[in-house]
Picture 1 (cartoon, one colour):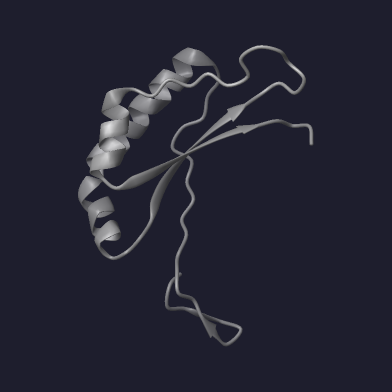
Picture 2: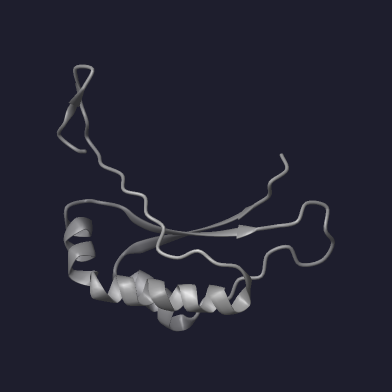
Length: 102
């Protein structure tokens, strides 16, 4: 964590990675966004303090894709409520489409 020393070097940042929800399909995706909205709303004061201290807060949405498939390979709908909540709390958004095959 920030401030700790490692090999004689003082760390200047801390990263925390957590998985809030995991699922497959449209219904689980929608319920996962609801879980995330509730999580951010419940912890908005804590997130606000982190941002005030210069922290960067980011939400990453991962979506598997089929390599070599034709047509839509990524279809993600983000509700205005979700986007507004991220914006109001200065939370960045990263969307990643990935495949098992390099």
